[in-house]
Image (cartoon, rainbow, N blue to C red; front, side, top):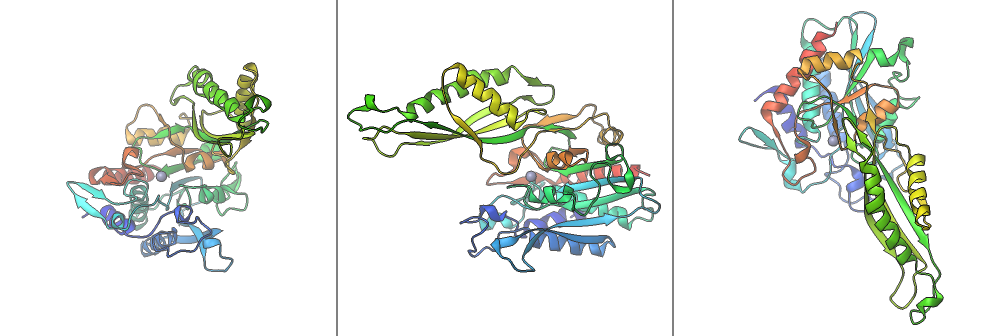
Length: 405
Ligand SMILES: [Zn+2]
């Protein structure tokens, strides 16, 4: 068994379900042995300490709605400083949380060259590959001369990305963002490699996600005299029709070279109270996957214009507190080019799903996504990772880190 596989098996056995997915949500306090990332953060800190690395826990949010010290959800920050002054920084940034699963999924199972269990590919596989690469580098005789390497295990990616948002916050512990540390230009001297199952492809672009709520208003009347009222459900039915046909077609005409097109999905609807009352309100919730450059204000404007052209009226609200922007990192940046060469990939790729990379990029750190495993197995009942790919991922990362002076 390789060191990477052993670490991954140990990580799968630890509780890690994002507390937002606990019955009753993050503020409830049921028996929650599977919930929270703290056990993972503590275990990684201990593992890194054994390899002689510097460790810091960055408190991000209070767990369980408790107000007491000692119940924080924390990012774990592991640092390898270079021998000389820091000239560039590589950030290895996988997330620590997972989606839910039944208890049996927290027992790692090895079968036919695969390791099964919750988080195997999303994203404890990346955690194991990245931390093992860093530990092996730290234990080698030759530390990098001028490259600082930081492993940042981030909480809460699966819900609100509180971990990555805290990492790049002005008061965050890195001081890397926007040309920050040592007055360097972050675009030229910093690269974040965000761990997600990309089948070891370097991903430089992904879509963003915007959740909008649309609301139509009508006028209530007796169900026996519907002509005296105005039916908000009927108005909304027409809105849905426009969104799913004309607006969806409009989005299909706007293409991004790596990402294809944006999408719209009407995912929820509710309206009215009972059959014999003309409904005076109706709401829908939509998920709009955005391309780089598309903003919330712009999306709201184009939807409103579409509806206006059809003489339809609906109020539009954002129903997600934190923005989830799209990612588009310039593949010509020197560190991105060097990483692409290490992986022997000629051109970068884009993916549909959203991750922490966009948050770090919005915070001023050029970011790519990379990790072992296939997103097709993420969030499924039988999650697994190829052990050969896991090991290859660790080797590629180590090779890249060693290629930096
Ligand atoms: Zn993930």
